[in-house]
Length: 340
Length: 278
Image 1 (tube, each protein chain N blue to C red):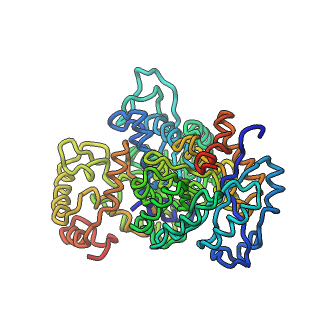
Image 2 (tube, each protein chain N blue to C red):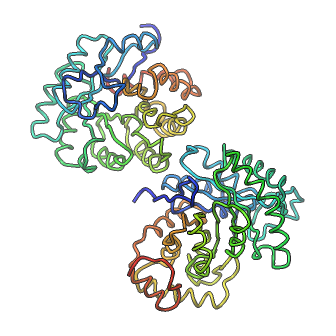
């Protein structure tokens, strides 16, 4: 054990470790995280060889960025790749009116969508200030999908992003301020449009290439492989259920899991058990078998979770597991998996 | 002697015609020539360092004898870290013979060049290290990050042995591989009483080294070993592949500038005096 393997992100020169550290939990996603625990989680990840960290201004209204930056400050800057996102500005607000959605115990800010050119440049400057680090390596335009904005508003947001955010990021890339630019979303359909309309280096796709959803295999992943666009898969546990199993309160895409998802998860669990494999190990390793995928990122809120995720990543999985999952129609027959 | 003792705890001399420096090949052109006291003396005069520890560079007893002879005629060499075949059946006799020379302060098997990472855990090596300890010598551990776990295991069996880890265990600074090294260094520092040498880091950082690139590594060593257990060394003439003698000394002084004067004095001399009984 020890060192994690690294892969090149598309055509960029960036090397990402196969497992990346998802920073959303450090922003008090679902439950608060103590400062010391947040720091220990990051330190444990660094010490385990994790070399890719992702965050966003939205995650805890800046909490995730400031905690991550603080914890990474003692680490040589060459030792890790850092991504954050643009598309919301944080406006001070009355502490009594803070609404964090799935995030709790937050500083008094209100996130306001802002995909304008100037708004994005300001957002990057404030992210750097919160991080307190000398540079950001990858910037994603955050949440320009129907998942976030709804079908009625999304087309307008998308136009704003392509007219404002994209030229701003492209400029930062040309100036060498960042190494790569991309889009960080919860659905791949919008990525197809982005790949047509602009020159992105990478996509961060959350929850849409997992043991519960492989529709990205038909068009999205082949396109990325062909174009040399690097793919980072987030949400390998679909926000919870693929880590916990179909327990009471299990979440799917940040909401209580519907009955159909619970039933499929139980079927996945049954086959995993038959092959002596924890469900979470199969969920974490599955996206990495696709050649377009550079890294999978998982949220981690404590040193224990870091250790647990590393154990899942290194857990040996018999090839027969994948064969059985495909035979039962739970995994797309065309999904790249090791021979069984 | 006025002021605190300033010691360079890690330097080499070699004479190529002796012919046992397997690692020293013509592609290391700038250092592929003889280096002796006459080359180092002006650098010491220039920097104010008055004493050095002369460290072996070949895995032979003959080279150690050569270094001890040099030490006998070179006033600034305060001690020699030599080599002995610690896993040999007659290791105790060899160590006993070498230890008769008052300049011999420590022994260094070239662990980094031994292919089997578990070599150091072999029983005869353990026996050899007990001899090193019995003769009051220090053990210099020339290791890479991959050896650190085994080194921790080894040292658990030799709590009385004085151990100096060379070159901060050679972190892979150029590749930016910080974390696993950092974790193992922390473990080593917490579990043992070993010293660590602040040396060799510019070599690991590569041609575009800078003080700022070294800083996180140096701060990590200082944080976990503490300033009582960090020892300055130049690794001259190897250092000259990347930086001049005075240049590395200046970089080290910059990196230590935030410490108290007495603390800096420990790192720049007193700690070496204690570790090697100079």
